[in-house]
Amino acid sequence: MNPVDKILGELESKRKAMNERLMNSRTIVEANKIERELWAVRAAIRHYRSMGNGKSGSQLERSESHQRSDC
Image (cartoon, rainbow, N blue to C red):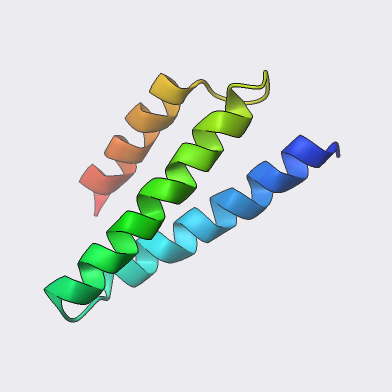
């Protein structure tokens, strides 16, 4: 596994955990904080994927919106 794939794997795990935290947040303030962090993680994922690995940014956004609609 190359370093970019390793970073992407770690970021994907973090994104999934943060999505779970967001779903279980109890207050608007907590949810807003998690959402800001989640946007940063998504941006990092798009950055690393744009380096020629994995899905493109638009494919990532479609897959994330599909996952949100499944909840």
